[in-house]
Image 1 (cartoon, one colour):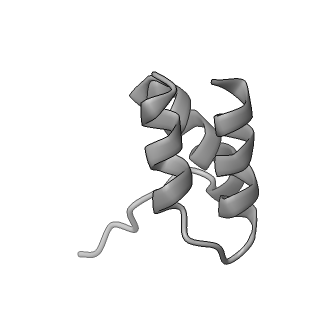
Image 2 (cartoon, helix red, strand yellow):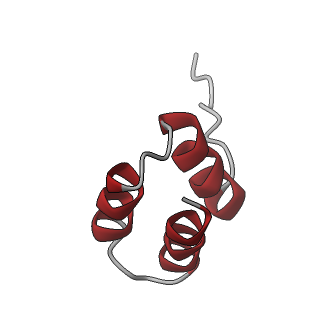
Length: 52
């Protein structure tokens, strides 16, 4: 699982397609939380800008 999460981080760090590493994570039984944490580490967390 850790190797697939590392591959996902590497893909997210660059401009690579993240779908294939995500599928590899699923096949290795990584949890949704683990995958989201890996992406959040690379991209940060989205914060909506309130508009009035």
